[in-house]
Image 1 (cartoon, one colour):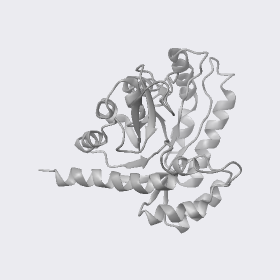
Image 2 (tube, rainbow, N blue to C red):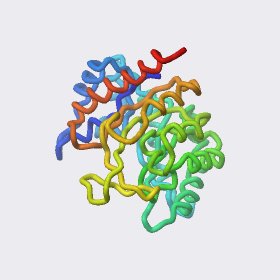
Image 3 (spheres, helix red, strand yellow):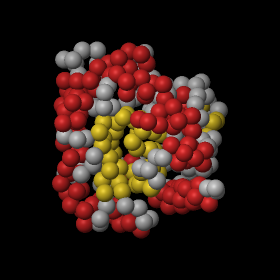
Image 4 (cartoon, helix red, strand yellow):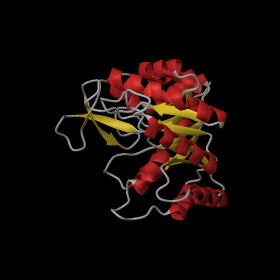
Length: 281
């Protein structure tokens, strides 16, 4: 298992109107001795430019994350989302990424089941396009209570209805549906091809940054290791299964700047991974 950079974490520190500094980001990634990046949109850069610069820094682009709205009841209404999907797959190809990830939020006017049926129908319409280009399509556990994909049961059900669909396991988000991080991994392990690590602390409804969750609790984002997500137990489950891919470090809190959080978070994750090796029989 190896740690990867996620542009989303660093881009959260941008001020209004400030442009994402591609070269500085690559330099920072290399300073942390990381070799892979998950791109969450392209921040106004052409994918060809991103590919050239990341190649110059000997960095791999391992995933391209973007939104496309497939959450409509008819194929005609999903047409724009299908076009967005195809453009996203083509961007992933230019970046050299072999997988994409679609965050699915749901819609407040729809039940989770209605959103599930709409999105699954949309994915069934586009999955062949990605398969023909050898790009793996993934969805993650998304923590918004209206999302159709939160629990491992949700994700496994989607995989069974959309042949070829796979899972990006988010060890923090899956806990918002009432599972432990380790349970969430074990229940979907055979379908997981990419991983996000983050942390949440259970809090009161009126706490700063509190967000409502499907399990009825409220959580706020904190740095990996500071919350209620059992990171090490999740890693043990991943190691026991034989997961050998990348793990994005992700941070959505406010206590640290994105740069500070990434430096400390990556240090902690490396320590956690090392503890697995040292505890091996």
